[in-house]
Length: 280
View 1 (cartoon, rainbow, N blue to C red):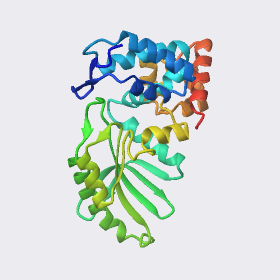
View 2 (view 1 turned 60 degrees about the vertical axis):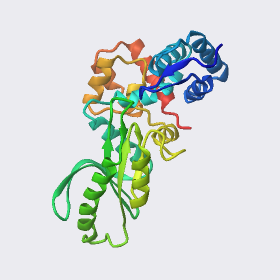
View 3 (view 1 turned 60 degrees about the horizontal axis):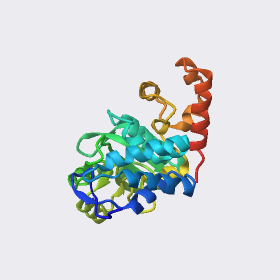
View 4 (view 1 turned 180 degrees about the horizontal axis):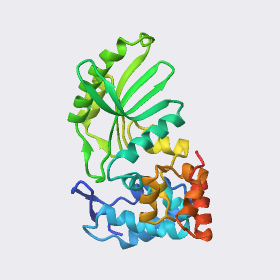
């Protein structure tokens, strides 16, 4: 196949289609290597000039789903996090759950008194001497990045809160930090500023090897929106009831019963969610 077929990225830019990039993204699904190679070959055969990366992803996802539902769920992780919207609140709860799994005690959606004014903070996380104030920036569009204005703004809020925290009893030895979590990516400037002022930044793939996708894989905390066995309406209903994770779903199977889902489908949903919860 001609190597120089141009495809259109989410950002609107064009680049040459690279089958190795597709293979690497498919490996996230942890499907068998022969399945990955087969899907990549079939997708490559159907690539046309100007095709969007979104369309390529959809093709790969459909093929993978036919071979393994759970692999398809893992492959769609990025999209599944975007499906937590539109308010962004489920994403805040999701971030809180990841931190809890990592040993933090968390409060989601709290009003905190700063030195000058009150602040609405998405997540407060504490573990040993660590005390973090976290802002969650959720985007439902993959092409939107967090630019430098976000950490600049969050850092100024954090400094106001930190002044207040420092006056509190028992906080003398605590390590206070401001943080920004996003489900998309940071611009280079945003990362540079965050590093410079000592903020914690976490995005889909930053820091390298410990971004959201890596932490989800390690903990097995997949959002229920990753399940291919639930309809969009069912996912919305469960999110409205505060169920965010596959883990919570198989700990509370009664929710599926209450929604009138047939026994056969309930078993499929719970089987997939159990499989997704296995951490790596």
